[in-house]
Amino acid sequence: MEPSHLEPDVNVEPERLTWRIAVRDALFCGLIGALIAIVPHVASKAFFGTWEFHQDLDEVVYRLIAKPAMDGSWGMRDVFVQSDRDLPTTYSWMQFVPTSHLALALGFDIVSLGQFWRLSGGFLTGISLYVAFASFRIPVSRPRAFILLATILALSDAGFVQGRVLMQNALIAKDYIRWMPIKPHATNFSAYRVISPILSLPITILAAALLSPDVIGRAPRRAILAALFTALSITLYFFQWTALCVGAGACLGLLAAYDTLTKGQKRRASIIAAIAFAAGVLLGSPQILYNARIFADPALDPILERIGRGQVMPPGDPYVYVNLVNYWVWLKALVSVAVIWWFRSRGVAMFAAVGLAGYALANSAIVTRLEFENWHWMYVYGPFLAIPVYVGTVAFMLRWLGPRVSAGIVAVLFVSAVALRTVEVKLAPESMLVRGFAADIAPIRPLLASIPDDGQRSIAGFVPAQLAALSMPGGRLLYHFPYASQISLMSLEEVHERIALTYWLTGMTRETFAAMPEGSVPKVNLAEVTRPEWKPEAVRNALLSVFDRLESSPEDARKLMDKYRPDWLLLEKSQHAIPPRRGGSWTRAAATERHELWKLERK
Image (tube, rainbow, N blue to C red; front, side):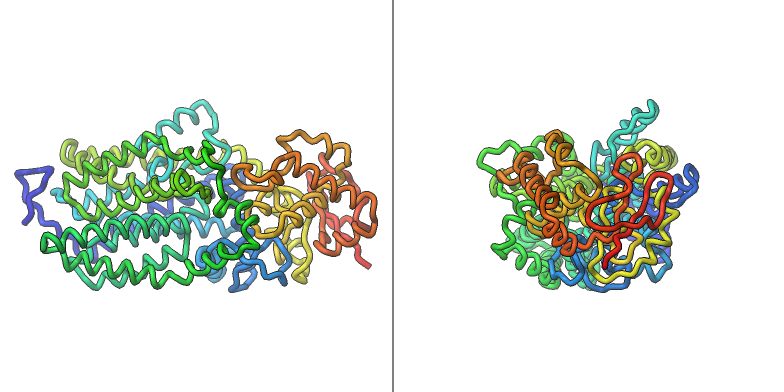
């Protein structure tokens, strides 16, 4: 029997949960996570009569990346270029291909893929959090209530991944009461954001929980699972596995050294955990080596910089400090230290170490000057430093408020999460924009799906064309605004040609193009402008040069049309020149209330 730090007069037995109860409770938490995740689709059905929901334009591009797999391919390729071009991609094969094939097997299609991602990701998030809180063995008189309440609290808190932990729901509600959106994207509950972190975070949480020497000490065979989940995390998401490796590696190294020097009873468990971690890194090394090969190619250096993969920042650039001052991270770190000290939990220490590693990596450009969109490490330090906060909060609630009041508080937060996720569907401007375009395109999806794909054809247009491409075999766009230049490893010259050709085909005049405000010139780089060729005026001049070739030389226009094969054109009736008169002879294939689809008649 072990005395409780919270309740000195109560002796608690830390291992009273049977496997049957634990599995049942874990599944229950998984269902809670899936329920909160799927709320926007249910709300969309109630409000708009369709299960289709896109959180933002990011989700559209993620579905496009998954398109080859949804068409049956087991390969991972750059979806922005012709299929016979062997351009590598910086996205994870494991994140897109197996999940897409599983979705297909279960009857989902490209339109309903978001439902599958949210259901499966939410379910895994609930289970992973249950495993994490159960692994801590916090000495309270009601361990089962503690695990369930802490898990549901984390699942229901909008501040779990991003924002102010335990307060974010109230802050969102304050603005929603005034019918004001918090941000353009329907991603206020960032834990359920597609495709990351909803599919990758649960795996990293499980890896961190299983790597704890306390967990492995109770059952050394769990080291196998720890190694497997560590390897799986490495194959999924760069920002999470790097923080896991730095944080868990440092934590396990320090624990093993401490236990060896003090000849502590946990020495064997610490060493086994360190070995499991090393084995997991070794198993995941093919993904690390794949990334290393891409970064080692000098020909790709300017392209990798353009897409924010190792962008070299100028000395003293203030951008490198953008992630440094974060009072809520500092507060969560202090609370984590207090919780670790109070409960003497190595499992909680593991999560705090991974969270602090994520925060350190987010600010690594201060030293290295290398920018990888470093703010994405928020998807690590946010949740991993929030989990110790939930541990302390629920433990003290059970002690001072009792299980019934504690359950009532968590239930209120759960209800608020469901309500806020419901309202978000009607308030997020970008989500509503995509919904409107998707609804207008829906009637011509069968026609789009019947278009034969030769691996070359593409569709030209803007946001509506992105949605149309989802239904077309191959799913290729002439140019994806704005992501093609920020994701694809195509050259900057090709980016210029594709952008200019899109504007030219949709009827823009040179005068309009030349007078375009600087803020409207397409951005070709992802983060900060650190190269002269990325400056808006340089981009404008490069695009005008291509535009002039298209206007003055029919031969150059034909060559670019043959090179990129924009055989389909989606025009918005209120915005574009109809009928199209450039690039060849066009035939109207279909029309909706707001758009017309045109097909190029090739000889």
